[in-house]
Length: 267
Image (cartoon, rainbow, N blue to C red):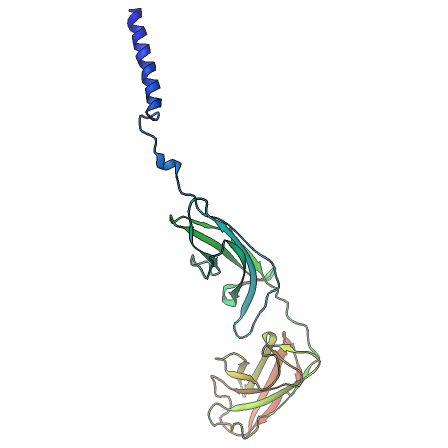
């Protein structure tokens, strides 16, 4: 009887040894070698340099400088870039493993906070040839919101030359305005409003507003310079339909009134 027990123990020990040799797991299944070669997602990092940003009136938004770096340990990165709209698509494709880029953040993607000013977030992502995605953490951008202080500049307004346009005849050129003073007025912060009767019309250097502002001289398209004449014309609205049209004028800079003529008669 003792001999039979010894045989059983020997056979059991032999089975345990053989199960290790043939790669059986504790549940009797073979090891999956594919698990050892599992795909690794790309490694990425990204940051904003916090540089000064530029705001433009024609295409409102901010330019920012950003940095990225990326690699893939076991394959190749086939697509990468910046997503500024946070919609899961790449807005600025990138192919270099690392580098600096200047990207544009449109104004309509930015939210305004009374605590921080304008702010938004962007993200950098990459996908490898096995379909694995990886991305940086969300990067929050904040922009200056301070408007300029009041200006000592002044302006004078006159009826535009009759040869340029006659009131009531098509898209009229109504008024010419000359600014005087010591400094440029950035168009980002200039607001010109015309009024006729009880109706008010906003003027802009960008197309599509009630009233259009055109610059005939000057060296800086982004600012109204001292001594420079600008012309106000009808845009999407008919402002004056006859001669002898009395037009009220309001000019502000950064929300502050600019001293000048408050009305002119357009013929």
